[in-house]
Image (cartoon, rainbow, N blue to C red; front, side, top):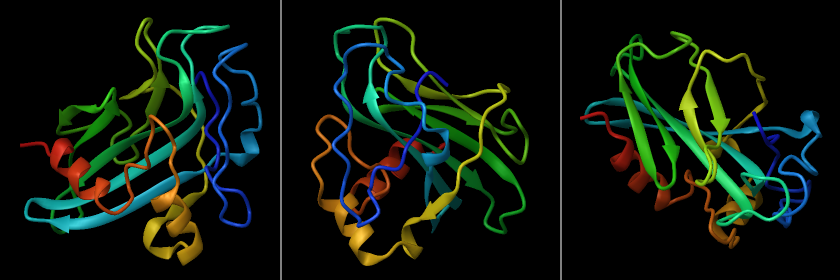
Length: 179
């Protein structure tokens, strides 16, 4: 992972300001104990969808100033399960406002792994990968305190937006559908 995932909220459910996209592309992102995974799930006509999302305080592909760089980045994957939740049907990984879809078995099997990467000149995106990574605490949208959900729902994150918030979640699931 080029940039360390972080929580997008401070302790008091106040959104963080992100980092200015300048200097080192990994500058300011060395606090590995502050990473977090956001999750939200729902049943659909075709099965169960679980969205896992990560927040990065900046999206910068090169050191110094990079074209297209910006504060804040949210990326996500959607894992599709059978209605009885016993079979992984596939997944979709976000990048540049689109989803790359994989039907059937995902790298990592029942515990898919994801990689956050960049290929110049585009900014960061996710892909399913066998690369070894880290596991972060999960913050479930439905179990979050109302103040945290409200902060994520209402904060202007600039070019980025929490993909799991009301309105965006449903739209993203439609884009990430495997069929």
